[in-house]
Every structure is written in C-alpha cells, then in structure tokens.
Image (cartoon, rainbow, N blue to C red; front, side):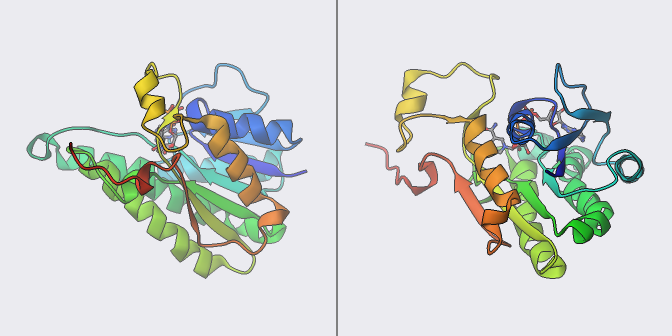
Length: 230
Ligand SMILES: NC(=O)c1ccc[n+]([C@@H]2O[C@H](COP(=O)([O-])OP(=O)(O)OC[C@H]3O[C@@H](n4cnc5c(N)ncnc54)[C@H](O)[C@@H]3O)[C@@H](O)[C@H]2O)c1
C-alpha cells in the first residue's frame, strides 16, 4: 500500500480522492490552507503556492511517512471578474495556486517518486479548452497545467508517470443542482467527486502502467455537445 499526497484535499474533489485512496488501504497526506472537517489522512496546513511551505511539507513527509508513491495536484480556485477589473496580482495569484503549485510539489517530490516508481495526477479543467466570459486567469492556469503535465511526463519518465484529469461540472455542494443542470449533460447528470476519484486512483495504480502524459476529460460529454441557439 502506498503513500499519497493531495493538495487541496480538505474538501471537494480533493477530499473525495482522499476518501477513495484511504478506502483502498493507502496512507494519505492532505496539504491544504484549511483543516479538513474529518479525515483519516494526515492533514498539513500548507499554502501550496508558497515555495518555502511546500519545501517544509516534503521535509515532513520524508520524516513521517518516509516514502511517497503519488502526488495529486488538485488545489485550485477561480476568480471571475471582467478583464479590466482583474488586477495583475489577482491574475498571478490564480496562476500561483492552480499552476505553479504543481511545479513546486513535483519538483520537491521527484526524488521520493523516482525511488517508488510513483505517479502524479494533476486536476485541470475543461476550461483549459473552452471558456465562459471573465475567466481569463483560471483558463490560463488550467491550460498551463495540461501543458505542464506532458512536459513533466517526458522529463520524469520512465520512472514517474504524470497524467491529467480535466473535470467538467462536479457537484461539491457549493450550488444546488437543478433538474435542467443534470439534463443538459449527454451522460444525464452533473458529475460527482467519485467520478474523478475513481479515475485518479486508476491512473495512480499499476493498471495504468502504459499511460503517461495524457489528459482525460471527465465531463459527462459536455465538451462534445454542439450548441446552437434555436
Ligand atoms: N468542482 C468542479 O466543478 C471543478 C471542475 C473543474 C476543475 N475543478 C478543479 O478541481 C480542483 C478542486 O476543485 P473543488 O471544486 O473541489 O474546489 P473546492 O473549493 O471545493 O476545494 C479546493 C480546496 O483547495 C484548497 N486550496 C485552495 N488554494 C490553496 C492553496 N494555495 N494551498 C493549499 N490549499 C488550497 C481549499 O482550501 C479547498 O480545501 C480545483 O483545481 C478546481 O479548479 C473543479
């Protein structure tokens, strides 16, 4: 059984991945700015956009868990603001959490992952490929994360595999889901955290040995649906 690090694992998709990996018998370390409400994982308060905090996170993993089999780069947030109102500081803050943190985490974890022949899963978004208005910083960060994924896969192979999941709309309890929200999806429903967690667990495991540098869209078919106004 392995040791897995999840950034932003205190709630939402990251917490769902933690639940799945724990249920599969693994040890999990959650690195989040917030404390999880309850989890059998070891929780470390860490702003993963900060290089010093990420370095000390890995000092802790080396001392406590003494090995690492996988990293799930999941921490992320969105600022939705008209372009002229979005400050350069806000743009860079979104990039720092959503994109640079993955670079920091994998850079610090590469030595332990090489030793375990481990794997990385990044959580991007279908917004890497399509947009609503006023989402420039988020779209740029997720597009960067898709590209960072294949760059890391090529640099770190064959020892470490690196793959990306791009979720569509996943219900994390932030908004009530209406019947029409479910109905617009070709799959007939909005996504659940388990939809992402199950694929993440597969990509981290031995059955995904020949898969690296890939992006998996998990969106109930929304990005394959052609939409014209009637
Ligand atoms: N929910 C969706 O519909 C959806 C769709 C596509 C992509 N995603 C992506 O999935 C990931 C998880 O999304 P979610 O919906 O579960 O979000 P969420 O807001 O429910 O949870 C995000 C977690 O990340 C933590 N976090 C944020 N910034 C951090 C930082 N700098 N350092 C450490 N922890 C930090 C938060 O404290 C929180 O616990 C994000 O990268 C998001 O962009 C979500």
